[in-house]
Image (cartoon, rainbow, N blue to C red; front, side, top):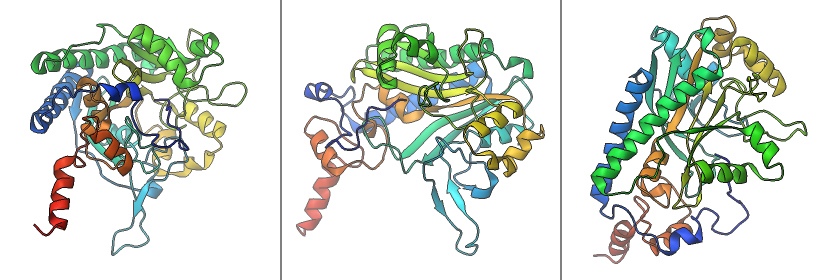
Length: 376
């Protein structure tokens, strides 16, 4: 999701002022909200597995650095790293996502074409913006599906996007009926190209373009994320060169077989990303994207070697934010209302005055600490 976070702005992580002014939590009771969170996660995962033909598998909490299995995101983010006590020369990293590991896992589990896997991923992103939609803690359904070479096309991408969106739509219908929330998603998702949006709104920022198209259509798959425009600037947000295919030309003249599922969030009055996904690189596409990103040395890693020599299958995959989906479906003003994370303490104090209860940082916790300080 293109960000509107401004690092130099005081209290930049707060939701919009208009959101806070009259905010009322859809589920004020913390225990009831926890029940709702579990219901959302269980319901959506079951819908996703059924619609996309996926099987739940175990996921790693850390990976060996020199394996090349970690997701490099935009190539500049710092992973959380450590060494085992008795093996100081071994460098382990908490993954940003399982974008590359999942492709290896399809090979490891010998998953046949037409079927896939999904994991309950937990990770850390030390360099993420910490605001009302982003956290240092990442929880998502990381999924990957084995496809035939002939399926590396826009049509297959769109069919898969529609299957995932139906899982989102059906989950909203069930949750809203159970907890008395008004559903807002349209039945169908609209497909839009980032290349076309740039032509229509050449002077708008990526975030402004997202807002324009999402406000109109309410649910959008924005195709073509990653790569550069002719002037050398990002086309629309960054993407690593070794998982999504953002280079292949489509029949509509645009580039990239990937994209983001975005919805309009009326509470925040902005576009809201729920998923990043795409058809993965072939050996030829990865080779070209690595060269364009000036990091061909990655080809020496184990994972990259396995892709280049044909060991790893052709795939489509992505990540769907668990806390992000819960925040949207429960109409929460801040992601901290649905997950335990760390947030600017000064912002937490402001949020408490607007009925925004950050998990673990609300009044009961601080009241207990102050009581202990008083010696009671």
